[in-house]
Image 1 (tube, rainbow over the protein chains, first blue to last red):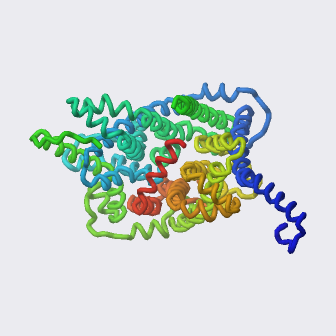
Image 2 (image 1 turned 180 degrees about the vertical axis):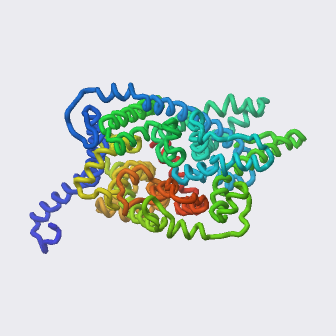
Image 3 (image 1 turned 90 degrees about the vertical axis):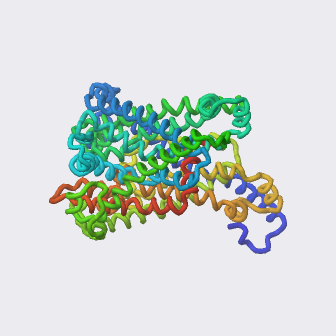
Amino acid sequence: MPSNVSAPATGERRHRRSLAGHIERVLPRLVVAPSLGVALFFVYGYMLWTFLLSLTNSRMLPQYDFVGFAQYARLFANERWHVAATNLVVFGGLFIVSCLVIGLLLAVFLDQRIRQEGALRTVYLYPMALSLIVTGVVWRWLLNPGLGIQAMVRGWGFEDFTFNWLVDSDMAIYTLVIAAVWQASGFVMALFLAGLRSIDDSLFQAAALDGASLPRIYTRIVLPSLRPVVFSAVMILAHIAIKSFDLVMALTGGGPGYATDLPATFMYAHTFTRGQIGLGSASAIMMLCGVLAILVPYLYSELRGQRHG
Amino acid sequence: MANMVRRHTTSARLWRAGLYTLLIVAALVYLLPLVVMLLTSLKPLDDIRAGGLLSLPSTISFEAWSKAWSSACTGMRCDGMSGYFLNSIAIVVPAVAISSFVGALNGYVLTKWRFRGANLCFALLLFGCFVPFQVVLMPMARTLGWLGLASSTSGLVLVHVVYGIAFTTLFFRNYYVSIPDEMIAAAKLDGAGFWRIFWRILLPVSGPIITVTVIWQFTQIWNDFLFGVSFAGFDSQPVTVALNNMVNTSTGVKEYNVDMAAAMIAALPTLVVYVLAGKYFVRGLTAGSVKG
C-alpha cells in the first residue's frame, strides 16, 4: 500500500492523495460489484440458462441439441402438468382468500383495545417461524384418519364422523390449503394490524361524531384505506403459493397418485428424479412467468403511485 | 385506534364477551398443532394407539426425544437427527454471517455513496427476492459440480449467501436511507473515509437492523428444504431434509411419537428465536415483504 512509504516528498504526497481520492471514488462501486456480479450470474444468467435448457431435448443430463419449443408443447399436452396447474389455481385462490379474510378479521378484532393483545398476536403468528416441513409433518399427523382428528372426534361418540381428506384424491388438495392457511394467516393479520394502526384516529372520531355505526366506519373508511395492504398481501401470498414445494413434499408427497402435485413439485420430479431436464426446465420457466405476471403489475402500480405522490 | 363510543349497555358487554371468546378460540386453534406435537412426542406408543390426539400421556417419557435425537432411522441410516442438526448449524452460521455483512455494505453504498446507476443496481439485486428458485436449481447443480462443491456444506453455504444477499441488501438499504446524510457529510469533512464512516458511524447505530436481518436469514436458512434436498449429499443434509426422510421411512412399526419429537427438534431453534425476539421477527417479515 502506498501509505506505507515513509517520509514522501511533497509532490509525491499530492500524487498519492489523488490516487487515494481515486480509490475512494471507485471504492463504493467496487464494494457493490461482487454482489451485482453474483446477481447477474446466479439470477439472470441462470434464468437464461434454464430457458436454453427448456429449448433442448435434455433428459438425464443437460445437453444442447435445440428442439425449439417442443418441450413447451409436451408440457401443455401433459396430463400431470394440467393437474399441477389446476391445483395451483385452486390452492392459490383458496389460500389467498382465506388468509385475507381470517387475517383481516383477526386484525380488526385485535384492534378493539384487547387485553393481552401482545400474547394473542404472538400465538397467531408463531406458525410463520416454523419450517413448512414441520408444518407438513404435524398436519399429516392431525389429518391421519386412523389416529388424528377423525379418530378423536369418533372417540367422542360421533361414530360416523369422517374427515379423511388426506387419503381422498379429490379432497387432498384442501388439506394443503388448511395447513398453509394455518401457517400464513397470522402473518397477514400482522400486516393488516400495522395498516390499521397507521390510520389516523381523527378520521374515526369524526365519523363516530357523525353518528356512523362501527360496521359502517369499517366498510366505508377503514377497508378502503387498507387497499395497499391488501395489494401487497395478495402479492406475497401468491408468491408463496407459486413457490409451494416443502409443504406438499411433507404433507401429501404429491399424492394420492399425483392428485396434489403443484408446479414446483412437478418441476422437481421431472428434473431430478424422472430424467426429464428439458421438460422440467420448461415448467420452471412457466413458474417464472407466473411470478412475473403478478410482479409486473404490482411494481407498475407502485411506481405510478409514487409518481402521483 | 378504534375509539369506540363506550356505552355500558348490555349489548356492548355482550359484544366484548363475544369478541374475547372468538379471539381465544382462534388462539386455541392456532396452538392445537403445537400442543398435539408436544403431547404426542411425550407419549409411549401404546398411549397413542389407545387414546385420542389430545389425551394426556399416562407417563411422561422422553424416550421418543432421545431416540429421535440419536438413533431413529432417516432413510438408510439410523443415527437420529443429531448429525443433521449440526449440519444445519454448520450451514446457517457462516451463511447468515456472510450474507448479513455483504447486505450491510451494499445498503451502505446504495444510500450513502450513491453513484450513477445505483438505483438500477438496487433494482437488479432486488429481483433476487422474487425469483422462483426452481429456475436456478439445474444450473446451480451444474455450477456446484464444476466448483467441486456438489453435496458439500460449503456448497450450501454458497447457495444461501448468493440468494440471501437480495434480502439483506433490501433490509439494510431501507434502514440506512433514514439515517441523515448530514452525519455522513460532516464525517467526510472531518476527513473520515469510506471504511471509517461505515465502522464508526453506521455500524454503531445498526443494532436493530442487524438483529432483524440475522433473525430473518437464520429462519429462512434453517427452514430451507428446497436447496437442501436438491444440493446436499448424505453427509451434509440439513435437519429439514432429514426430518422429511425420517417421516417417510417406512420400515417396521411407525413410531409417531419419534416423528413428532423429531419435528419438535427441527422446529425448536426458530421457535426459540421467535419467542425471544418476536418483535424483530415480525419487523423482518413486514420489511422483507412490503417492498422498499
